[in-house]
Image 1 (cartoon, one colour):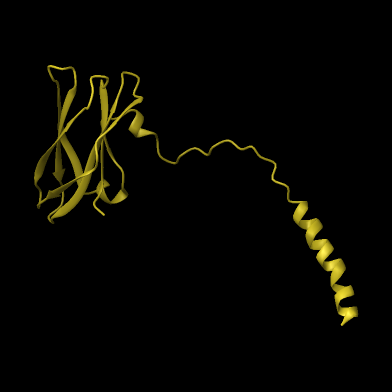
Image 2 (cartoon, helix red, strand yellow):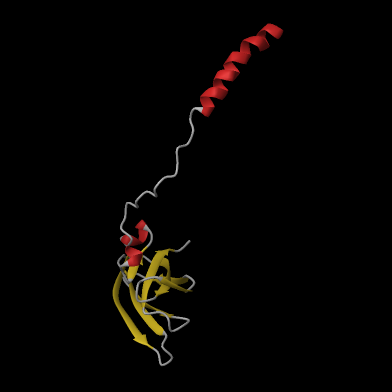
Length: 139
């Protein structure tokens, strides 16, 4: 029994030394995304590949309310011959496209075959100058 344990000592020592030789040499730079950062440049983005083929935006209307907040209404259209369910929200941003911390909760939109529905968002404060409407598949 003792000879078996003695024979294992060099193997265990080799494993310990080998484990130490794989020292992580960080820090690392973040990897670039395979898709452009559309949320920083566009007013309407699709978050899932599934909605890429089923949803389109036929128009966006925006207006400034009397108290300085902005109201945005998006026309979301179902491009398919079947009923679909999506979720939409809006991130309000300042003039430099930086979030003001004002983000609406996702709301469910049910679209019948080839239908267009209006979805309205209102900013919570008057800091918002721009926005990004985001649409994803309903979970």
